[in-house]
Amino acid sequence: MSDAQHIHALSLPIRRVPVKEQQATVPTDDPADPRARLVVMINAFWQVQALNAAVVLDLPGHLAAGPATADELAQRASADSLAVFRLLRSLAALDVVGDLGDGRFSLSAAGQLLLPDVPGSVRGMVLHVGNLLWPAFGQLARCVKTGVPPPGIKHGPAGFAELETSPREAAVFNQSMVDGSRKVAARAIAAYDFSRFRKVMDVGGGYGAVLAELLRANPRQRGIILDLNHCAEGAQRYLQEQGVAERAEFRTGSFFGPIPPDADCYLLKYIIHDWNDEYAQQIMRRVGEAATTSNAAVVLIERVMPQQVTVTPEHRSVVQGDLTMMLWDGKERTESEYRALLDQGGLTLSRTVSIGEGFSIVEATPVH
Image 1 (cartoon, one colour):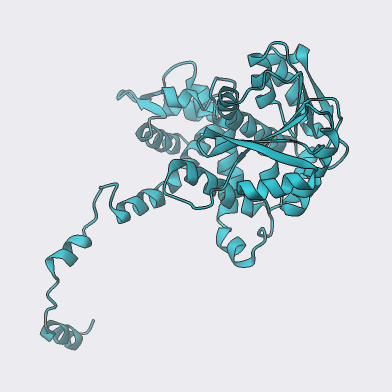
Image 2 (cartoon, helix red, strand yellow):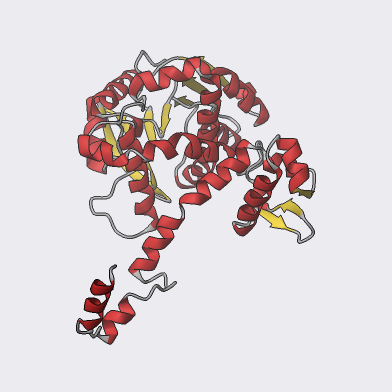
């Protein structure tokens, strides 16, 4: 600003800001304040990638044996010592590690859940979100503008077929599904009577996390996982670890092809939301062709979109799923939309059972 401009600015009349207007511009930490809530949302961006970096470097694994310094962890992770120290401080602020105050860090109870093969592990989810969902959501505006998945996001049958030739990506994806499925499976078992079924086919079941929970809860039940070949080895190992391998088998197949008609429950968890209406109708037809006996049931475990969205954790879970699936040409659906899809397979929606956190069981039976 020049001297002349500065003098002119000083000569301008002072605008008196009303007290209420002044107060409205002061940032607060009150969670009821709209600005504060938005700032919390915005500032959450770094937490996912801090967790992702920790898992990629396997810092939880390196700390599992006991407390260690940043130098020691950097050496084990082949990383820069100062950068590891700075990452550890951020993880301490998130209560993922503990800062012992003597230069050493320890693994917290939350950090334990970033280890593989521990009850409640979220390691696979962190890698899935941090490396797959993160870059995809950077293109959400483009997806909304065009109405189609952004370039570079492989979706539909081609997206899943790619997992057949990408073992590392397949392992991360399938482990993420395991991590996210066990809690939902427990809720489903508590809310719905699966004990009446003789044999359950987990269609598109991945490693079989849901099926394993069902079989453990129902010792007389048998099960089948039907999925692509990239899931076979991981599924067999997982079933063995869960102690149900003697009552379960893996069959290589696709829900776009003939489905074996030798089960009385066809279970599809998080399957239909992956697909647009055209593909979802094809899946329902295949399932309907298999579920032909009078006592057969088709059980979907999905988020069910409400007719009107409200400010609740359940509805946030549903819309989060819907935005995610939009990037891959899928969608979350309302109960009436599921009813129409099931009708395409000769199935009738018999009931919907909420199991909490935005998830529901959608039960259907063959039309006779």
